[in-house]
Length: 259
Length: 349
Image 1 (cartoon, rainbow over the protein chains, first blue to last red):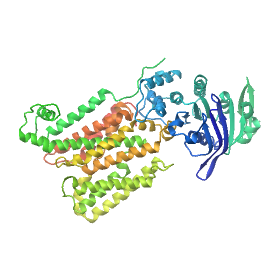
Image 2: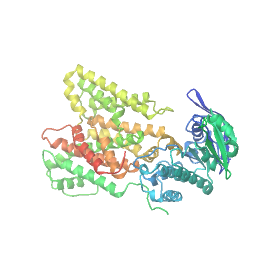
Image 3: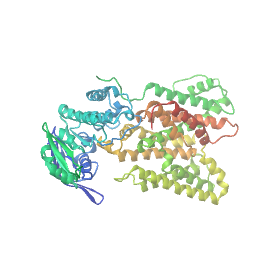
Image 4: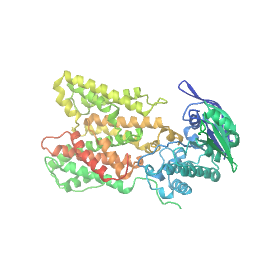
């Protein structure tokens, strides 16, 4: 009972981008949302975060999101965007410390306890050496890890990730997702992530949904959703799903057989 | 491994440097001029007026009059206007996340210019003190322009982007500049007055100008300083800032309003002094980083010292004539800024 969405609809201009979506993620679970470009995945995440107005109802930790202030919502949900803004002239420690904002009184400054928490968060993800560096000098992978550390400092119960690994190489993709999984296992954080890489999407998730045209068209365990027929139909590409060691690996197939 | 890194804060050393800069600028500004006064005695004379301190400066009564009646009010006006322009610039840059943002961008300069031009055309400039028509009309013009920009730019409306506001500012500024040019063309006699006003000047008639701007300086600076942590949160962009519990539109609206009010009041008493709102915050960022926790308070101090020194240059290099201070801020400020830019390896906004 961490995040429950019922009949969520989002209209941008006169276009209905998300339509009648029902979701349910249990505390400590990992939901991966997959779907082709334009399926409404990111918009759905933005609705959960309160960044776009939406119809239907969203409950976070049993509380109606409509009744929550921005601060209250931020105390429960942390956000990792696909391409985070890079503040100039800000050190990594101060960047991670921004996570305390939702629980800090207006006009107050983070104190020693908050700073210690930020240092511990950096250490948890192997970033202690980078604390004094400028955020703008970090690599893409380091930056995403710093965001995960910021989410830890935010003490949110749910982490919302919008294609967190799209811009990263393979090694950093694995590293960032392991960091998120670490957060889930050690800190009991719930994860909702949109993912382009279907193999990685299924790797950590205990539940998946497939979105197309603004609707959820399939949901279930990775084994159920990563179905060759289902993927092929909605992505417009032929795929094969290879099961190896209990993992579901989605392999795209060429349209015409090479001679 | 746990790091020992500490969060950014306003270090005592930086603060002391800022205060020292203000004191130095004040003593030099009061001591130097057509009649040179011994700087040590000027310092003692100023100290003598600090509550709780009593020293004999050794200045003659005439020299003391020069200090208190002529130079000190002008230096203080320079300090106040400089701090207002610098903190407004720093706040604009943070609110719009744009290193080139400046209060003049949203039409304040053009609006004030048109207001002042109306004053000159109506020949209303020779009234008394604070109630001079030109500063009042300049202030009204600046507020009209910024109000129009805000109305067109849709500030506070859901979905309005900062870039819309900037574009509205550009359009409003063009409109007011066109109106001003039209007025000047029709009445070429005021050209010299308008020209000299546009280049900026700090002239005082006792304390009236200082008293007129200080309330704006205090209120607007307090609002901007109060929001400096929010401005740091805003530096990660609107979406992330909102996911961190901030209302980006509210913060931007309040901060930009306060900064605009401050700049409009400064422009009303000093004309258009360019460059201060850009180079002072940037120089500070190059040295201490971009946290508004540090940049905003230091902008107040170094902006004050910078403009008081610029005014000293303006009134001494071509004695007895005075250079327009806007010329000095650009002439001195631009090379200084380039030196800081070249000698600092950090990549900053």
